[in-house]
Image 1 (spheres, helix red, strand yellow):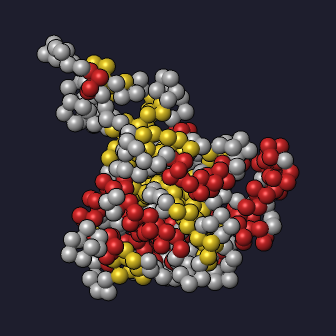
Image 2 (cartoon, each protein chain N blue to C red; image 1 turned 30 degrees about the horizontal axis):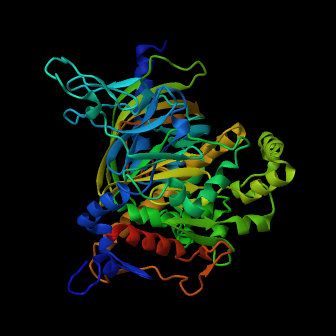
Length: 165
Length: 419
């Protein structure tokens, strides 16, 4: 068990990390965002609910670390037309919680809510999600080992989602 | 028919090498399409493997209409309209499940999963009613081809086999990729919505002209061989099967490579179990041929697209509102192949896919573009002078030619013009 004091310190470090991730995403700073990942990172955006098996069922995104790198490289070409021009984005991150069930391997399980306003050539779109993270201390810095983005409407037909969610 | 000129409106809007922009944007034309195409011709609805057991159901659609595909106790597949015969409430509000009957939540009318009305609440007051006249609506004709279930609201007209015509062979070619000769649709669907007319999607599926440009971002960074299939030097073909069905035939390119599983960017060595099962099922030579040729890239008019490794189903909701339902093809008896099919499908299609996100962007930009009234036409003349007939009498052209679009519009005009 963490003491109250160290828990508060950890919580403030986590909050700062999540805000920073949100800002890098909003500002299309792809390389800086990619550096937030651990070498074994998994980026998962399920479809049709929160509890599907991504090894059996289709997900909107189910990227291992090399596919995360590919996603970033495609965005960096400047010719990924659905992000050329780039969407204007701002997201709110809230309800940040350390989860009761912590992994045994020392990773930190954290969850938050996010509300994202996207303005693109198509229109203005509001996205809402529950985000679940596994964070890890690497060389004194927090990194993402896993990020799961559960879109509130992931069982419905949704518009193109080409920014980093 | 315009009485003054003797020219039908469709003849004025559809010419051999061009179509009028209003065909994509006019709400009245969209309403006419629902009646003359979506509620008349054969439309793909679902696959038998989505309802494997007695009493399984899955909710599908024909255009904006919700359709429940059920397998009843006797094993028969039914296509029922999701509308209570009493006051119109939707009788089914879950996407899938297993149920012998559907009970309407409004007044508790209950229907068997073959559509029969089996009971209404407080039956006194309904003296003398004939229950058989109060069944759920049905899609008038239901036929299946190798597990693919199609429905038509027309009481008569061509059979499904006649409608598929030459394109049936592409489905035969698809199922051969399974050592057991069967496709399974078991991975769930991604549903990708676009603000664009459905025909932009339909035409794009077999447009071999755009990949080099629209997908340059992913071809440039991924170790993909797809780009080479669509270049100016490619020997791949476009084909018009008639009845609106179109194909990009990549076999000439794969046969040049002469390497089994190259169509899927892999090799026999990396799929040893699959390769062994294919050879056991078809014999060494035929298995080798199947594994070199790969799966088809075919658009079955108006809504079923088989894109080598995945299946798309086009659903129009409004003149500028469409959904692409997408899933990985799964082949019975091929678990090692299927895993790769799922992984590659998730990478390439759906709202965040490396390929489909950019295609969708193009549909939406085209839709906004054609709202401009001038020039009025969409030009589809590429390859018109060099197209030819293949040995079966189907029109073929270079992979970058607009043979498919011209074929689609010829059939479209036939359907839209009053007989």
